[in-house]
Length: 364
Image 1 (cartoon, rainbow, N blue to C red):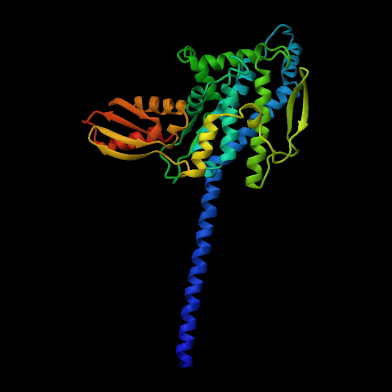
Image 2 (cartoon, rainbow, N blue to C red; image 1 turned 30 degrees about the horizontal axis):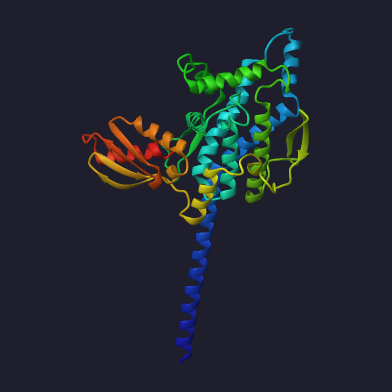
């Protein structure tokens, strides 16, 4: 083979190899940038509020924040007074923010198919909702109310050109205005908030705080969750190892949690949870959790796939309630086994318009 032809061939091969390598590098950079973006809009806000709630519960349970706040009242001369409404409201505000960000963390980002992360977040939700182990006390919120409160105060940002849906938590000022609204306070949703706020205000000490045992279990679970996510993300928000609060003979004691925790509180409180068993099987044997999408549509009727419907009946009710609020909807048929629902609507509404509205309502 002539030398000139050999050189041309080698040059062509080298160019091809360089192009492939460059393309692969660019794809990897694009993937890293996309992951960083998902972290920024879903994982980081969730991790921050989980740590904020864990720290606040630790202060209440271990650092006797209730007594500290009441000492401040005594110094002002109000010996028989209560903890201020705004101090109690701030604690409830953090809980509601956690509800919102945990819901979106569950649906978006890089942990939607992480079985352990899903187990841990669901454990915390179960602890807030569990009335068998803790009773119907303060800090008790059903799954439906957790979802409703979370979505009410952590809302989607519209008008953005972002590739992924973005969310923002309402401010404490806005939260206060809505909770104080006399029109809202008559609903059961806000009565739960009022009951929790009053429990905090009326507590004379940490031992006297209604719902203390529930909060201890939640604080423990939050330590496990934050430790686990930080171990995956390769950074930590904590300056010192987190400690778990524990009751021994009705006395609060502390013990340091391994980082990451080897065993979550899930195994202690909910060893036989059928929802998590189904969810783990779903994630391991089927496609990852994904957003709702349209399966079939004709004028006046749309069938939509919602992957989580066959895992959680309360989630199905949240979705149904959201769709029922759309003007022109006539009826809804939910099929949990097929993870789908059929919506019948007014044929006068343009199909494309209704599809867009429907997907927006189910993208929660």
